[in-house]
Length: 245
Image (cartoon, rainbow, N blue to C red; front, side, top):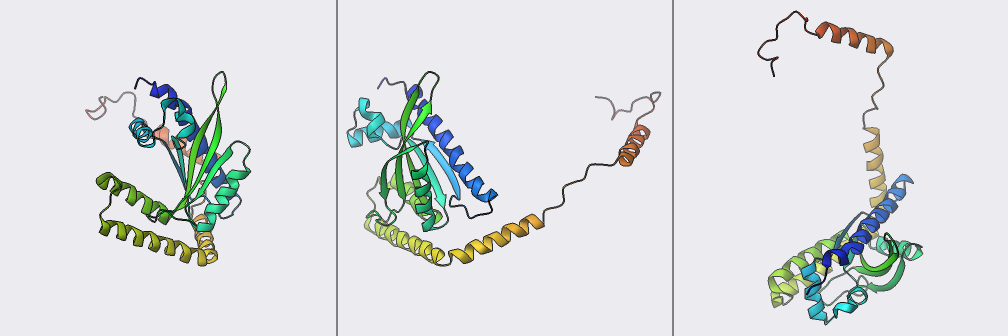
């Protein structure tokens, strides 16, 4: 394939960079307001060329339809603490004017047969290039920390088994997925307690921070200058070996 991949992927790289900044800014705004932020942290990536080609062959996607038929070339992952935060983040994305939601897939309420849970949102995002605007598709995955842990392990095992897991491994993965979701549900039940504890911890951290250093007074500056002058070597002194470069 003679495609200029560097040029083709440039808008997707720009989209990932901009989207990461915007979602991290949302998190910072919640923190500045002293409120619980639904966003724990944000990551992003552009799909590697070999993965794009492999998916094109597997899904029978023609090269000329790549921009419209492959929705996850640009990928953003938003991790949250609680299941309820997933839907709050989805609401935030729907309300934004700088991106348009194209498709949503709720694998949280309706998990995949493997046990995979996550909330997928495909958006159309405008990129400002030098001489024109280009709209690209990006997939945003919103999931809890425990969902992300399970998905990361499952993804790693895929490299070994190519998706054809032995029956025992497959059964263990499903049990682990259910245990992970039960943990999320338990944490959601005590959400208010957890958030209150986090706020108290954050307040304690602020109180324990040392006071900002006060600027030195004129007297201290004067004393410092005198001390510095007395420490200077006499110009008549010959330098020792330690003084030589």
